[in-house]
Image (cartoon, rainbow, N blue to C red; front, side):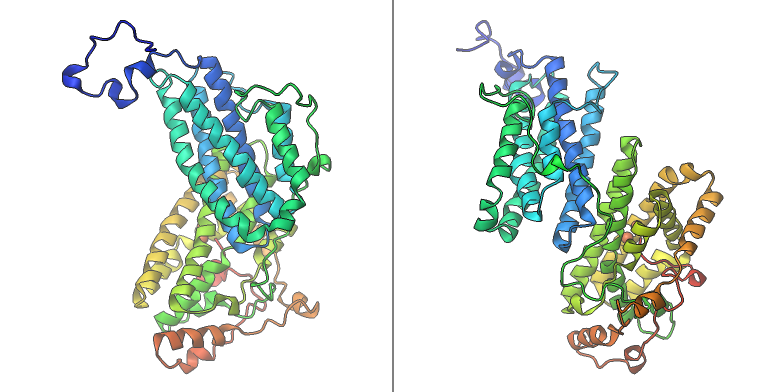
Length: 484
Ligand SMILES: [Fe+2]
Ligand SMILES: [Fe+2]
């Protein structure tokens, strides 16, 4: 039955869509959710996005699989944006004090703790992509269906936009899970998954809008999270990454040697890009181990972390496009390993800022872009163009969030230099410990590229054999940095 019994005769002007196209008059005439109920649901969605951001970020460093590291960086970034949007919306709804840090339901807290402490990568993926994200998506769909499309239009828009990105994340999960979780792995997680379902049911669904089953336990039960979560700052890599302490090819020195041709330099820049997978490994540790900042801090840092993961993927794409097998290069984790284990989070941020300031010089990102242009490889020029633009953004993120923690610009830069200088070269030590021979991998990579270009290798380039012995990776004397 129509809820507009008296409106039969009502027509919009010349039958134009009514209500700015938001909905039918009939849908907008249903009362829908109160502000209080809408806020309660938004707070739960906010909590879910925040917890997912934490789960993703916490696993980037210690997850060995490169494809997952980069996907986690992306999905963490998407979650951080939706956290920000939900905070803003709740703030618009007569809510101060906002109470956004409160845990909305004890069973939801345990639900996300269980996923955070997932006993394996398979559990983690199933927990995120088959439990948490579908529950969150269903909650947002319910908000859109239950609320008044006119009175709560800003929330409807928020949910709608979030669901576009959730759909992308869910699709990723549908493709990724079967690659890593077979039937026997799935059989081993039945009880753990059933507990996740039970926790959601105890909370009345993610949004609290579903009836709580009469037989639902009142005490949320912990399985994997019986042992509280402990962040692992040690970077791990999958087995395509070999010889992780190798510092046998000094990429920056090569790039700044005038007589080397631009195409070989472009190849070395692709190496520098893919090596940047160590930046999200390091930045994730800053984000996880820094507490009490405004959300905008985590949002900016997560954006940069995602950009750095993209820079690594730019390198990957460049190698694939040239037909060069990047696994023959040595993609070291020396930088993230050392910063994560030898520096405090603030010291790590200081080093990052110091390196990024170096990249703003003429000899930094602009030079790399120019080399990309001279190389005759249009893709490399594009990659460096955007890498440079991203770096300008990162320098401004540093100015906004790092400098004020130290004082002025000069002190902040000096502090970064001091922290970075403390990381003395471990070139000799890792060799003596038998961790690497610092083998020169460059000729193998360069020869592959020359084959793909159909040219014969330049003997000078082929003979390049300068290592990082005795140097920190930023080559202060040429004003250029390692990873950033
Ligand atoms: Fe970068
Ligand atoms: Fe950067």
